[in-house]
Amino acid sequence: MVKQNIAYSILELAIVSQGDTIKQTLNNALTLAKEAEANKYKRIWFAEHHNSDHIGSSATSILIGYVAENTHTIRVGSGGIMLPNHSPFIIAEQFGTLAQLYPGRIDLGLGRAPGTDPQTAAAIRPDFMQAAQLFPEEVTKIQRYFSVENKKSNVRVPIAEGMDIPLYILGSSTDSAHLAARKGLPYAFASHFASTHLLNALEIYKQEFQPSEALHQPYTMAGINVFIADTDEEAEKLFTSMIRMFVGVLTGARQPMQPPTYMTPDLKEVLQHPSLHAMLRYSFVGSKSTVKNKVKDFLRQTGVDELIAVSAMFNMQDRLKSVRLFAEIMNEINKE
Image 1: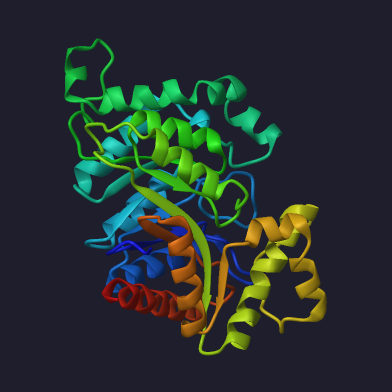
Image 2: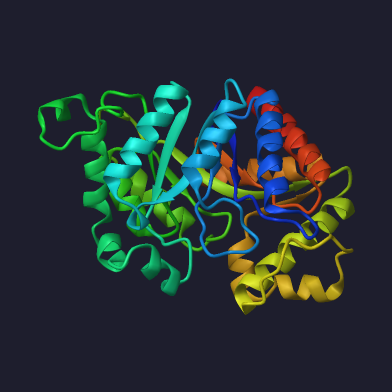
């Protein structure tokens, strides 16, 4: 059964297309946010990745500020801050500042992965592995810094105390489901690239959920890849850029987002490779009617409260059109 009033949002990595600069890519992220806002998307989140020539979303909180300053109503947040890379104190200061400037609009999604290779992770924070193991305690520190009660502490983040900054636990395995449930926080699963544990993780979260001051009942989000065009064939063509990008990730031959090509038999065969298939399983590609049916099936299967869409396309105009069509789909589903 599909829930009523499913929220829909965007996750943005700011992937650089061939021929574009990083500045153009970051400017495009704002254009995307404005389009999402006009089409009643609930939020746009920015990822955290490091040491990549072709991903612009690395200083996540700065990008959040840029987009929040130039939009009006859409929520803006992190999907996510990779907390073992950071001091919880500094993150509390950054997001407290953002919440003061853009009240009621800032989300803090937290993950425990490095968002980069091991050597870079060690350069960012030499004790990364230890910090990753302490992720639950580090989340608790941020909650403490955000609390009004912390005013009595000797170590405080005054700019963040009592601010409305919802926390979300991000994950791609079942570990994060246990943590989100135990803390009574909303749970966002990265099924746009990690499909294997999605259903199991959602079930664990719902079964183990403990109500908290932040959340009285479970709230789940799932990442999906969305490529919508006028025809199935056109959408498949747009999707080829992302297939090539993921092949580059798996083989280590990374390059900017490539122009789309026709979906060849070779590319279809590549999609069936077990690793790639697992990564891109929840990719909904096609015309509006085709994608609508796939989305409804996914909602019935998962029972999630919110979809967060990734649409890494080469051409910005194609992407904006897909964003508009996905909003139409979600509005139609929510009226049924």
